[in-house]
Length: 448
Image 1 (cartoon, one colour):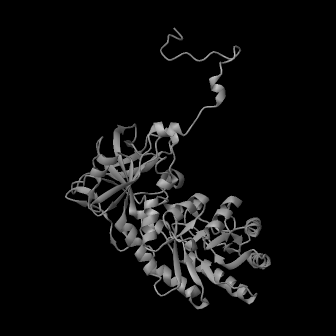
Image 2: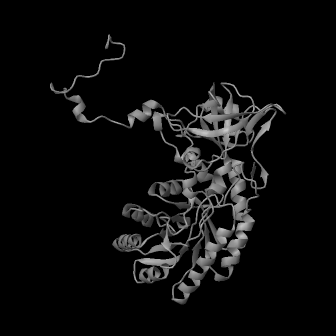
Image 3: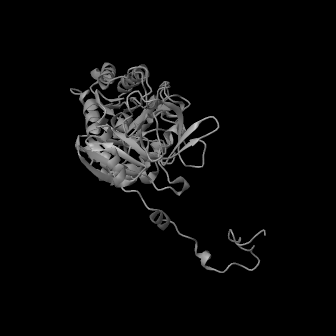
């Protein structure tokens, strides 16, 4: 697996997997498992490869915070010049806390509340992507109450199939996202009549993990046509938000993936002569292969027909395999001996769900209880989608920079998780006499 055009920074040295210059087993000994580990070098390389492809164009890279909202990750990209694409008030606060210039922040999403719209206007962000007529009216109403003009683009739905997973395609007419592109012209006319709105551009986003440029080209063609029509109608279209979605290598691709330079050429071919600022919203491409999930084998279980590697990571830590049947390469931290035999195994977690499975019948070298494994390609849509299902603490997150490590999110304790809860005040009252008796404790002699 590669990151951009360079060797993956998670590589073997002297028989041990390293994260840059740090042995992964040392990280596991320091913070425990499971743990996410992010590479600064990979983040920097991916950002420079992507942004550099647009040199010479009036373009702003707005990192899609939903991919990974850790402040250290967002802050690393901010230091390189990234703006942010956010989809909630919480993500907006993350972006601002990480130091991103408000003018380089785009607020997307189909369900913004009026409180979030007000938060965005108070922050002075650069663009709100509006996805429906009711939302347009809400933005106009909130902006008017604040006596400001809201900078908006309408997100159009171009009815283009991104040829990606069903659950991460967003540009077909049956998807919930955006305004049907054939209806957009009339909505732009209505928006122009609302004095509290500054109608500045068009936005489009057709999906994620897209591995073929043709869907992009089709969507860009429709956006270009719309931009020309809107300018003919008298609108000052000066920004085109082309979204994100460029795919990465998860270790299961048989075809070469488009490079950022190829993507940039497709953007330029569609829009270069329009004189618009181009807004780009990469997420997975910047952070996906900059992260690994480290986990320890708890048991090797011989089932009736399969061998199971039961690990201490679970679907609450990494949901993608359960949610999307997503593939992640899995490697032992101790480098396998050359020519070692492989066995097909299921790699599963301890959650009480049959969907808690990271791999099915995956060829693996010999592994025993106590060994460390890593799941690669877990920098995007991994920690950010985690939960505490089964009352399992959220996973620790670590960032490495050459030979240095920093814990950028500590693993919470069960006590801290329980401290966030409370019981209702009536629990302090005596139980009414006609209530059923409390169950007897196990082992108290009940049933004898």
